[in-house]
Amino acid sequence: MSAESAEERKTETIPQWKQEEVDDLVATLESYESVGVVNIAGIPSRQLQSMRADLYGSAELRVSRNTLLVRALEEVDDGLEQLTEYVTGQVGLVGTDENPFGLFKQLEASKTPAPINAGEVAPNDIVIPEGDTGVDPGPFVGELQQVGANARIDGGSIKVMEDSTVLSAGEEVSQQLANVLNELGIEPKEVGLDLRGVYADGVLFEPEELELDIDQYRADIQSAASAGRNLSINAGYPTARTVGSMLAKASGEAKSLGVYAAIESPDFVDDLLSKADAQLRSLAAHIDDEEALPEELRGDVAPATEPDSEESETEATETEEETDDQPAEEADADASDDDEDDDEDGDGDALGAMFG
Image (tube, rainbow, N blue to C red; front, top):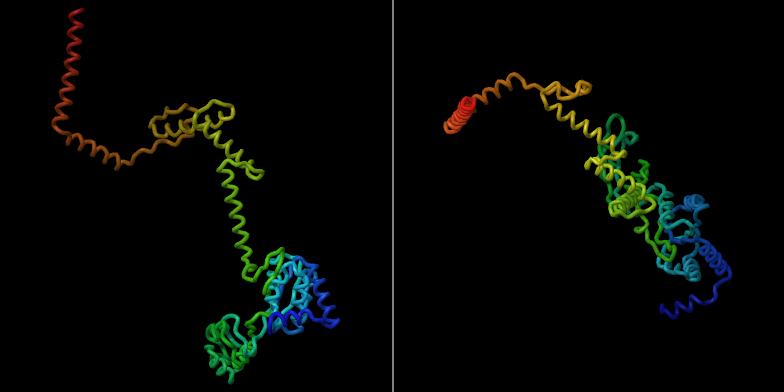
């Protein structure tokens, strides 16, 4: 069909009831901040009504003919016409004043497990879990084995001996597998409103852009805020949130400098005395003298550790060995020094005798 004929068909007069439906849709779309297109294929009417009720108060779901949905989106314009590319198959429009991320989260949370039918494509790997099936011994054990489950009769019932992947994601479900899953009560798919696209604040969002790990996102924000705060403090850039920490940091650094430089100030005197006391006690602990400290402080200092007898004997032996091994030259030099000392003493005595 040519573009011209499509335009003619689009602009031709439509029945009154259709125009009223379009006008109603337009009024609905214009009343919300965010508008999205959702896929409703495969959702039973009863469940769809339940989902519509769950959305009441936070969002509104409108279902109509696709041609009328497209007309309504194009009449509103204002960017909503971009959503027309998602209007294919069984879809509906959802309007909300929530942001797109909140809408996506709400729709995902509203999904419920459902059985899968023959001919459908598995949305993920289908696994029959290990355990007792609760089914009495019979032909069903053969059906389980045929679909790929490790099953056998044990203790008067049919048991699956280990978790068994019977179909991979993307593969088509056979009638036999559908029957087995239904018998076991396994519902491998989720039924709900799949958001195809949402338009808000002049931006078109797709599901991949709206799927966020909230915990990780929160952790990233907290990490960024902490890094920004540290940068502000380290760069000396005061803000309402960092000036208190910066003043505390500057006060601590000034105090440390004053104590280190031994500046006599009323603000530092207690710390200076504590520092001096600690240094005195540390020094006294290395002096083997009971009177190294004033009497009033002696009880607070641990006595110097005396070496063990074996260590003392070892040190004495090493000292003797060093003396025995002393080179002859050094021994002679020591002897010469002793002779010189004796000579000097003798000369002093002679001078004393000479001058009376």
